[in-house]
Image 1 (spheres, rainbow, N blue to C red):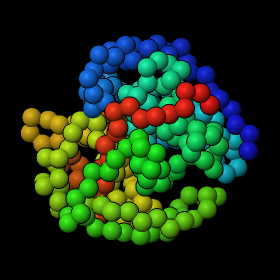
Image 2: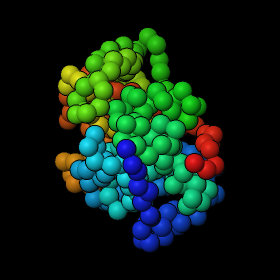
Image 3: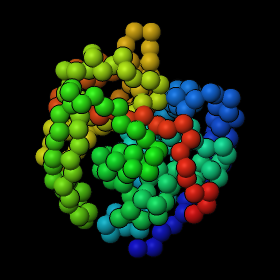
Amino acid sequence: MPTTCSVLAPDDRRLVHKLLADVGECASVGQRLRLITVRLLGAPYLPHPLVGSATEPEVFTVTLQGFDCVTLVETALALAWADDIEAFLTLLRQVRYRHGEIAWQQRLHYATDWLHYHVQHGRLSEVACGEAMQRITRRLDVLPGFPPHIATWRYFPTETLPAVSPRVVDGDIIFFVSMRQGLDVFHLGMLLRATKGVLLRHAARSRGQVVEQELADFCAANTMPGFLIARPCEKPHYPQSL
């Protein structure tokens, strides 16, 4: 399938340049993610931010003018790991696609596939506690035109949130397990330590924008079996060019 590379719009290019300059002195990826995501609060929620399907050519779409929950996390990670604009674009391709190949078939559509792929490549690590976690296996088949496959993952049951929350650090990524058969995760976002508890920053369809709220409040308002947590590595290895 043919692919098309997008061009970063001038307003986005200026914003990327400013964000990278502002986080340049941050000592950790968690500090960078805290600063980056607070600057993106209020950005509109985009229900379909990417271009491409089983029948439509994939376009490498890059914008900071709006997000869904996945593109917010992808964009924030690429910004936190980048030194300049070109590195940001290269990193975003590597975060979104297997081997950075711009093709719909290579996009990491399912969140658990995305997580396990980047854990395998040393870019994320799972926050785990064996005795508290449960294992689940599902056939993932809700995406039309994408081959179904079997996925297995471990997750924290929702009721373990009070025990798990103290282990959270700035920039951890949380994945909320879906109740729906054929789907692994229904939502994801980034976690930040607060004076009391943990904050969730995420692109919320129900609120129409990127918002911040108490993680415990989100979990109480949504029915789910549980959640996974992943921690970004400080400076993962990526190819310098593609």
